[in-house]
Image (cartoon, rainbow, N blue to C red; front, side, top):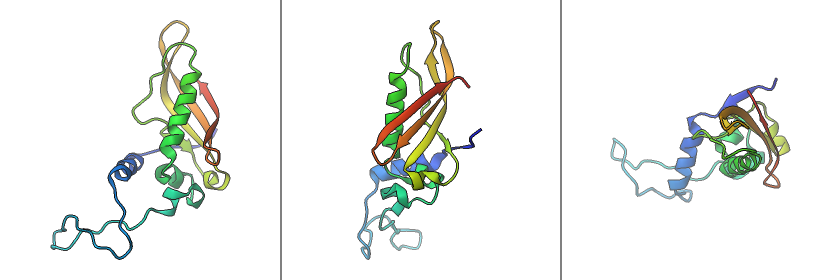
Length: 152
């Protein structure tokens, strides 16, 4: 059995920060809010190398939580799984594909395996049934290689 880890709040926070963040050039001072001592609050001066290049991530967790293209991979995996639904539209949790294969092979191979254990797909009788969706995604080509849908 493959070990998986749950993506926690840092992915959500990182995504929110990326949407509203701006980048300062090295040596620039922020004109933003002051800290308690009256000095300027410091802001990061550049994106981490993992955010901009998946091969620079130290392990699978680092890639899944920090690589800036993960939301696109998750969206592609969901779309492929949706297209494989035989009966109706699947129901997804708010944070999709919250688990992934543990280890350090994602940055080495460019292939990621992400898992959603809480999706619900309609069965032949019309009832929604909880399933596990696994997705193999190629970071180099930015395409889904395979999606597997199985009962838990």
